[in-house]
Length: 311
Image (cartoon, rainbow, N blue to C red):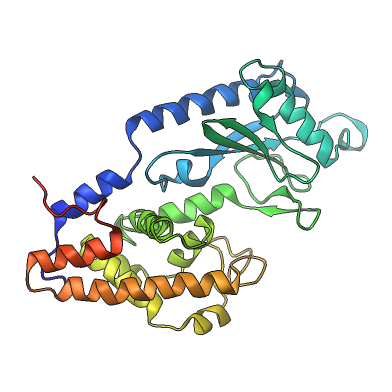
């Protein structure tokens, strides 16, 4: 247990890390407007009976600094009861064109819509980046709450299984008081902050999966304790040892330690950074003076974010 928990310092740190209310309001407004256009039952995308929901950092409350992107999943119902053969068949290009149509027909968005033949999603540059991911039901499914759905992956030119809602649910369960005591989501934010602060390459999804694989016990206690424990657990194994394991996504659909997911070169650099953080965090935990503990955490989290003094 840390000699100095620095609770008020960490409270100030997370206050600087979390997006402000103005970013929340802007993101919510843009999401509601776009959803209304796409889901309009008399609109230009109505033939696909689309249902939208959020995924990504905005939905999972893991955004840091600002909310600079919104990820919207558009689930298309391609099953039309009563029609012979189950309804019309749509290819990838038709689905993207139909979902983009209500945006192209709106003067606010027409010039800001971007996608191509190999795009995975439809993008809108509104200051906030909006990514709209068209997906379809799998086989004969028709319940929007059930997964997997099918999404287009341009790198393989195939439609593959996706689990956006189930992934969110597993993160929430991990974060629950019964498991990680509400400290799992804050740890994701800290890891994303460290990644950005030291300019290493690590996809947010992979960070979430890595942390999900850690034992619940490492997330116990104050930030000074659980962050040090998380760093120590990751650094206790070499990058080679980690990469030889199967680190599965929360939904168990794929291993993140593969060349097509988390490239070995990027993983080695990320692991090296976390190992350095672990060494410094142990110094913070053992520091006899408060100023010694503060300086150690500043070395990890940045002087512009972790305050030297708090009111």
